[in-house]
Image (cartoon, rainbow, N blue to C red):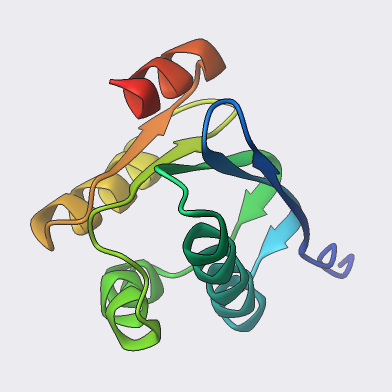
Length: 126
């Protein structure tokens, strides 16, 4: 059995679009995901961003459903702004990505999943 690839991310601010952009690679894991979310929160607040674009096209998610279910509570705990739109780009959408979107929607967080980058940016801009 091979070991999971470490989760890494790079965050930058797209000034013209006023969007915090994160390119994430590796295996999504709970603890690093929380750290990345704290860094995203800091970048959103520092820049006065209007949205977040998460590129998960090079990630593997092994998060259990209960971990996904807890994510909105973690956002609330760390003070992530509840009015910031978050677009999450995946290589393909499936029942797991839809579950993630539904969990956030049910807790009134504007998070949507996409398999098309242009659609994700269009939604963030709308």
